[in-house]
Image (cartoon, rainbow, N blue to C red; front, side):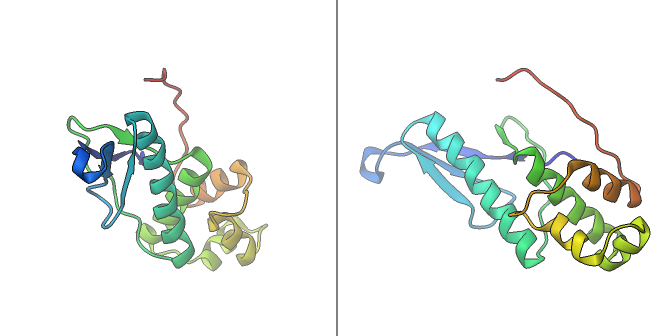
Length: 146
């Protein structure tokens, strides 16, 4: 699963303050803006990170990205994306963090909880192992900057 979320961009009138408005069709109430297109895109990345962070901390569902169509895509930074995909894998397979710890064998339930905490650094190798325990694998792809 690639966590690349489409965004809708619209130019704001001078009466509305100008700049660009960004909305996320897959995220209720996720809206940001920017004076320039570049600022709006940076703010969209921050907005997405905030939404994913909230869902992980509250144990809520993270929406599956819809097809892009002709829209721009915004992705979370890789560390946060790994945590989100791990959370999605647990939910998809109805596996608790405690059960995942048991599957891994050498880490505690508390360590699995740390893996899911968006505000704590996690060893990518450990997240890769956790995903493998769920029958998933991580593929790295490097693309030219747009």
